[in-house]
Image (cartoon, rainbow, N blue to C red; front, side):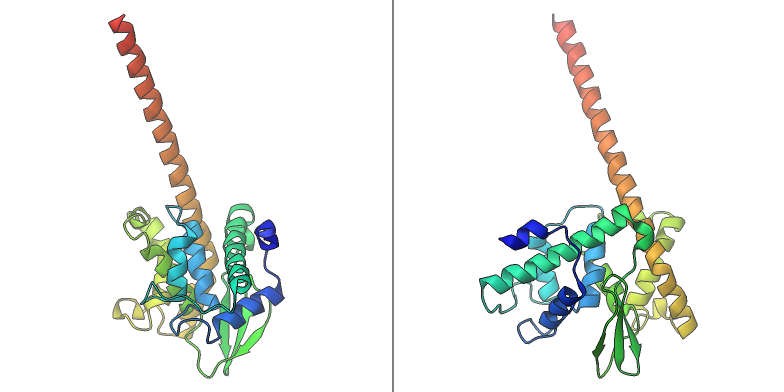
Length: 240
């Protein structure tokens, strides 16, 4: 249970490597997220309109097609260890967005002649890949997967042009390589890089949007409760 005592600690480089190794092993389903997609997914989870419990989002991490599939852990200790790393990553993303938003960077793999260099929250590192998806597409696909867990609840961010524009870089990088609607946004490396450069600020603004909206709704609920109490008090006065 020592793991539960350090859920607020950020992951070390060695722990990122440990998590990445597990996600690349035969212990996980074939369609399990990779670390980049996971980072985007958890960023949406902590940035969105509603609290989503790990019991709901974890199955999506392991498999997008079969929600009942889970990893084959070597033992209970490994299962607890991996869950601890995932929760610490989630907490670290949330803490950065809440306390140090200017330091937020998505974890991206940078394809360079078959080598993908880890950038952002994880620090520096490389891994070999025979082929790599376009830069940032996996992170953005992960983010949009998180959005789709609460698709209707996310609708307010699309209601004005300004807030809708925050989502454009994420959507274009997630879907642009296979959706004609977004193709014009990513059909050159220059355009793609421009969208990648916008990801940190777009994410921070979206996170702030939902914080402000939740705070406003909380205030409205409090006002409604106060109004109900006042109405009830006046009714009791009339009855007496």
